[in-house]
Length: 268
Length: 310
Image (cartoon, rainbow over all chains, first blue to last red; front, side, top):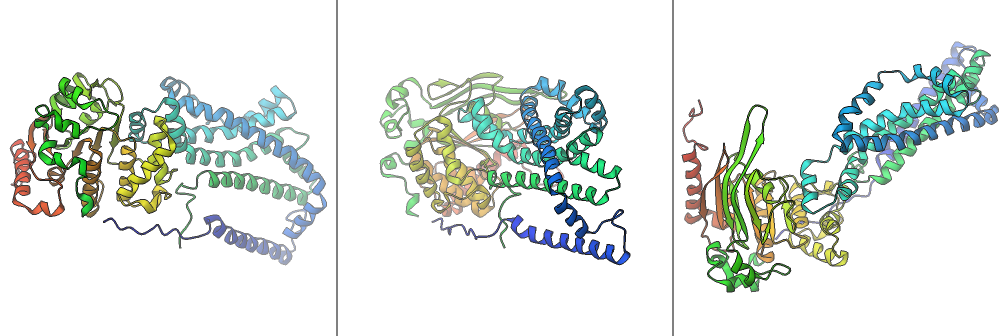
C-alpha cells in the first residue's frame, strides 16, 4: 500500500570538482592581466615583477625556498596539532562542566582581544630564537577557532536527541561518542579549516619578529636587500602551502562527513 | 488493505478484549496479549490490575516569577496492550506527563509504575518517538534503526533482520541505505518509529509524532502505526493535538486541561478494529469527535463565537 520507488540517486560529481576549474580559470585571467599590465606599463621588476619573472625566480631559488618552506611547514603543523590537542579537550570541558564554562570560557574569549602579533616579541624574549616561540604563537592563533567552533558543535545536539539516548539507556560515554561528537564534527571541521589558515599567518608573523629560517625570514631578508622577485616567490610558495593545508582539511572533512549539508553531492 | 487486519493470534482479542476493564476479570485474554520477554502475564495480572499506574503525580517548575504547576495530581491507569491518546491545549502538561513516565524527568510528587517497576530513572524497555524524528544524519535509515540495538548491546545479526522487517512493514524496504537527508518528512518519521520498536518494547511513548507532517502523510502514518501496533501487541501512549487523530487511533482518550495540567475526562472509544480511514465519516466517529470537542468547549479552550477572548 505504500508504493514508493527506489531513491533516485544520480551519479554526480562532488561540488569541488565543478568549482575548481572555474576558480583556476579566473586565476589564470588575473595572472594574464597582471602579465600584460607589467608589459604595457613597463614596471621595473624590482617594484612589481611579472608573473613570469616570479615563476623564473621560484625555479631558480627552488632549493632555498624548499629548505625554508620545510621550516615554516613544520611550525604550522606542530602549532596546529598542539592547538587541536589543547583546544578540543578544552571545548569538551567547557561543554560538560558548568563551572569551567563560567570560570574559564569567558577568559578564553576575552583573551582573543589581545592581538597575538603583539605577543610575538614577548615570546621571543622568553623562549629565544628557535622553533619554540614560533610554534607557540602558531598554536595560540589557531587554538581559538577550534575551541569556539567545537563548543558550538558539542552544544548543538537537540535536547530530544539526548532524551532519546537516555531512554535507550545510553551511558555518558555512549552519549558523547555516538551522539554529541558526530553531531559536533561539522563545526569542529569548520574550526579546523579556519585554524589551519590562521596557523600559516601565525607562523609567518612569528618569523617576521625574529628568525633565522622559514619563509617569513626569506621575505624579510629579501625585502632588506630589495630583492622584490624573491619576496614574491616566497609569498607564492607560502600561499600554496596555505591552500594545500586548507584543501587537506577539506578533503578529510569530505571523506568523514559525506552526510553533511555542506558536502552533499550536487544534483543537476 | 489486508495488511491492516489483526494477526491471527491476536484476532480473538479484538477490540473489547483489548479494553482495559476486562483485563482483571479475564486472565485468559491477558495470556493472548502476552509478549516474549515480559513478566509472565498471569502472575502479573494477579498482582497488578493495570500495566501502567500513575497515582497523584504532580510536576512543578520554578519559573522566573512563580512556581509553574505543569501537572497537578494526575491519576491514570493504562492496561496492557491498550492504545491511549492524551489530548489537550498547549501547556496542559501532556508532554510533561510523557517525560515523567519515560523517567527522563523526575516527578515532584506521586508514584508511577510501569509493569512491575516503579519509575525512578529512565524507564528501560520502552520506545519513544518525538515530534522531531531526531534521526542521526550520519547514519543510514537501517543504521539509525540499529542504533537502538547497539546502545542496548543486543545481537547485531538478529537486530538487523528485525530492523529490515520493521522497515519493510512501513514500506521502506528500498531505503535501507538512504541517508536521512534523502528521505521525506514522513519517511524519516517512519524510520524513527522503527527505531523505537526495534527491541520490541512493551511500551511505546509518542509525543505528537505526526504533528509536523502534512495531512495525507499523517493519514498514512496513522494506518502504519495501527498496523505495527496490532502486530507488536504493545501499550501505546500517544500525545496529540488532533481530535480526529485521537479518536481514530485510540481505545481511550484522556482529555486534559491546562493551568494546572490535569485530567478533565477520559473517553472510551468503542469503535471496531481494525480501523479504516472510511470510518472517519461514520456517525459514531463523528459523535466521539463531538464528545471531545464538547469537553474543550466547556473548558473554554474552544469557542464558536468571535471576540470571546477579549
